[in-house]
Amino acid sequence: MAIKRIHSGGAFEPKIGYCRAVVAGGFVHVAGTVGEGADVVAQCRSALAVVEAALKEAGASFADVVRVTYMLPDCADFEACWPALVETFGENPPAATMIECGLIDSKYKIEIEVTALAPTTGD
Image (cartoon, rainbow, N blue to C red; front, side):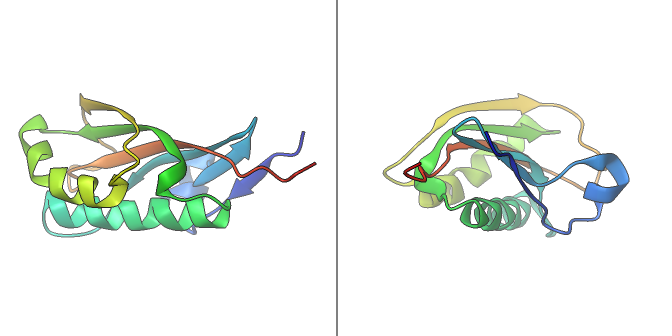
């Protein structure tokens, strides 16, 4: 079984030793992803754009996401993100978990991790 590793060029990838996503075992596993912006909604949208690019490179989309985990230092910030999440997942909502925890840098207000079905290759 082939494993495909997807790198986004993010600053933390070489520092920590990971890649943005791994396609293996019939799934696309996208690493926890933070975004840029002044507030939690901007960071949420930015992180979702990075996740979307990784999914696209793997041949998948948000419609293929089966599991999502949201990590926030302040759970009170989560509700502000809900409209962006509904817009993103629409008619294909995944199973979801929200965890309140510390992130790698205090400037980050949300981190998003997803698992999606990988495209079938017909092999």
